Image (tube, rainbow, N blue to C red; front, side):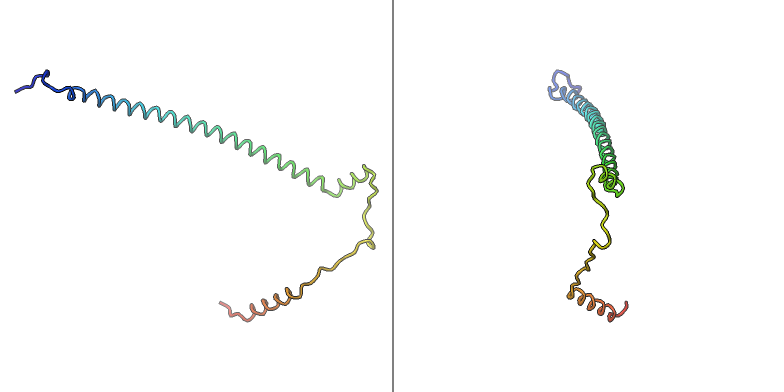
Amino acid sequence: MARNRKNQSAAIQFSPAMKALVICVLIGGSGVGYVWQKTKIYELGQVMAKREKTLHDLQDQNEKARRQLSMLRSPGFLELRIKELNLGLVQPQPAQVWRLAEPVDSQKVEREKQFAAQQVRSPLR
């Protein structure tokens, strides 16, 4: 016997509408999430490009400063500045230079001899 629509419960009539609503919310949420993710990727790409440009600029400044420092330390430049400022500095005469011998650590020399002797006695692998 066929059932009458009036006798069906409200939950049965409400179920298809609820399924449609859930599906629409899932599809809409997925779309919003996709757009949000793409926007964030774009923004992070912009930040990364800006930081890479800043890094490149700082590396260029560092290289320029390194070249300037090497130029300022060069003997020719120093001699020119000495003449400009009338400091009266000149190269020392060879008799004015004292050469000092490096002190020898007798214990260190003895340890090196012992180490060398151990290497000679060890068998080859």
